[in-house]
Length: 345
Image (cartoon, rainbow, N blue to C red; front, top):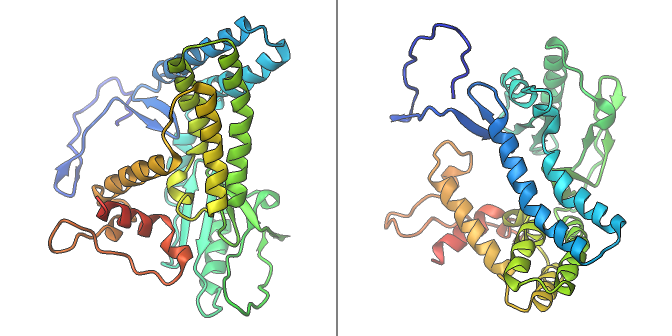
């Protein structure tokens, strides 16, 4: 997409990526927001309004069921207002801060292979692989990040910065505290990354418990729709949009590594919804398989994806090369699980 406000514009040469011309578009979705070549927000706002109007139907049904106003306000806040205020700081004043900020920080990268710098809008995550107790590369990249920010008029919030150490060695040595702009960084056992809780022992129970809690809160509204004798088709739509979307958040990441107990807890929500609606619903296992295969297919078809090389076809071309793993933790992570699911077709 080309953003050009000059009165007289010259045609630009087509961009070629791996011998394939890149398509020029008038708009694209960035961090959940539609950005157009003329930086107008009508398409993005129209999309939000359409989603909110679809959910207004359920609010009217709750009104017909004569629910207390306080309960309907809670429904509005959780289901409708959250849609209308999505990225409101960006489009309400006509700003393009996420896009411009990403462009501004594009040159801030890691210089060491064992350290990865991941940026999402104004959130930055630095991941370092420590081998043989040598933290020099990791700490050097932290210093480079601090220096880059100070040189480019950006200020790191040391008080909101946390460090999490993942260490499965039998004998661990205490590590020196990380200091950011003269402020010691707090070491935590878990943190939220793109909406998913990641723990220092790479267990998914905290993240799954959070999803179950949110889904159970929304089950109340499904039962109210049942009391109002709505058609099963409408309740299935409500379940898919409001409850299933919560239960399957990042499901390709954590489902294979979840415990049997956690999977039963998740499926219990689905069974409860089936009893309320009176018809069968897709199981989380089936949703996990379909979404993981879909994600694997997109990665395998995208040579620019960092994980593309892990989907290596065998000489026969019918199967993918299995990823060798030494621990069940690695075996149940996304890439080995995705390869197994693709090979099982």
